Image (cartoon, rainbow, N blue to C red; front, side, top):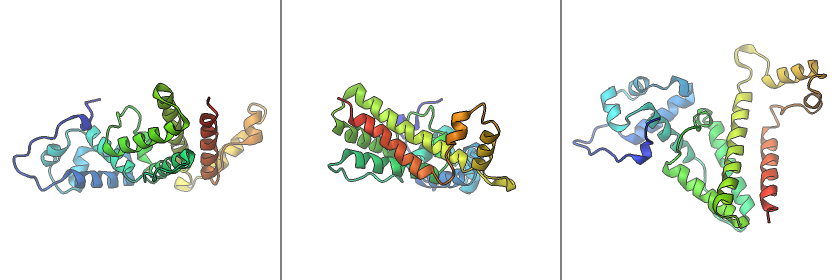
Length: 223
């Protein structure tokens, strides 16, 4: 992967082109929401912006630049809670907002891997997470590990839900129903799964909240 767009200096402008980075990012997010990351190309983005590729490349050098910028814009949709006295409530509020943003933009969770996440919106919310978790008394590597655990739980839960909500396409039965039937047919091979089952389509919110509580319970009990 090329160097992060956030680590490069802006190019000096000879003349201000009619296209702005903000407009590029807004159109990229719209395209990604409609068609997913696999359909994003610089040519298609330029066409949607009714401009030429040369003008587009003046603002963003690569498709990875566009994805980084779009991803940071999605993080900007996540409200930063007002810091209160209850660190758990602040973490839950931040992580619930992050999950909601990823569910509203399903492509975002899938492109997180391998990206440096150095945009201002990402860093502001990560900094808030660190500061809030520091309310448990953790510092240094211990604090970083806690933030990593919480953040990756949220990403994982969003990815699972996004996959599970790809149901009913093309007249197919919901995946949750097909999964339950598969486990029932193979009860002898997977007795625990057959007995307790996977999440149903209406369990996502409750399961997310409960799982996050389990993680925060563990952090709260650390000496």
